[in-house]
Length: 116
Length: 402
Image (cartoon, rainbow over all chains, first blue to last red; front, side):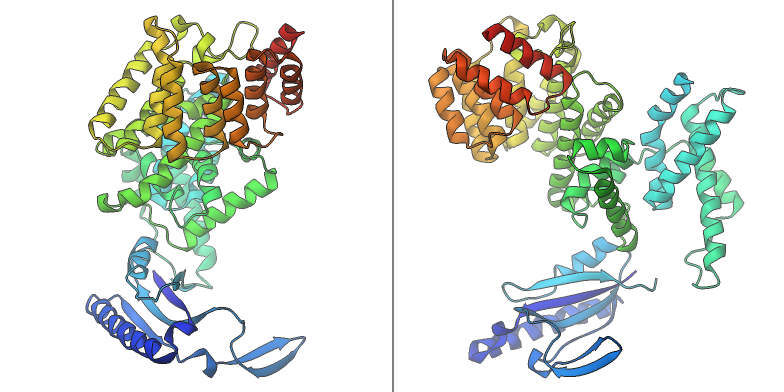
């Protein structure tokens, strides 16, 4: 089954000089995990996303579409990246989700894809 | 007819679990079993089956495969076929195997951490023990439609999120076991509440005893697993003594010990000994020890209330909450005195509209000679819709005060 692992982290964690160091550190851990998943043939795709200040939202309502600056919801945690994996079942996906590096307060969400 | 109904409900847990494990679909397993049951009630009066469970397993499995094939044909125009349908040979081979015992696997599915906490016990009781949605709604104090929705959502999550139909690997047990133990505890509490064991509660008391035994065998080095298995046995052993001839509840310290089931007590004692030898205590072992203390009356000794009160002190540390605190207050009342018990009850901070609180308060007030307050507490308890056996017991106590 294919699963998407969505990574949510507080944006503030990567601000300033400590934040930049933290980012370098965590990116290295992601590279290591992705390398391992690729070697095992589990990894189907994935990437980090640029900061939420780069986000643009298209909203549709009443037949009209509007484009505006910023993410769709103002929350403390933002989607920071994702993995697309192919594993036998939810336990396999959760085992990988637990290995995804996140800063303190970070969360990862595991969702199966619609296609089987 | 009742003979067949009994055979069907006895076969249900094992057959549904085997179907679910094989089909990896809870709804399909339950539907197929219901279909097979309907067929059985037509076929069996004409030709009684040699082995009702095997008959149901074969009939249900064939029906499930047929249903799945029909669904696959319908969907093929839209979706790619998910998996090749089994050939007729495969169906026949599977149907001729003895029914595999997959109940434990099914429990781990129903208690997966990805399933909402408030759905796990209900789902387990529904799928593994075959309780009706209506009965579950009553047990969990919710409406039937809310219960149906909770169960439907959980089943859908299992199917669509890919919850594996497997007993987890041994290293994952510590994480996974707690949810299973908590579910079995809730399941047994439901069976225990029904002192008279009318209706379907009888079936699931038996089921919890069996499941806890299977778990204890598989996880023999997990003391809390052994503790739970002991706990449900000690409680079950007293069942024949819990109601008097008039159908009124009898509290443990007044039960006729001759009616207690010695065989189940001994089984529980062996389990609790094994747990103690592992030297890692936990709330279920402490609760089992409290039950065991009550059972020491069977050896002709008085109820050791001081020990019981001390055990509740320990339990309150491990599992704080009003249930433990109110039970502790009752024990303190017996061990030290009514005033100390009332003080402990006040510290429990239990909600006044909670039946066990009013019942405990009534007992302690009566013991302290505060008759008017005891009567008021009994009236408050009676207004909280007690089960028939407890109602009778409370009414009798009220009459004795007046």
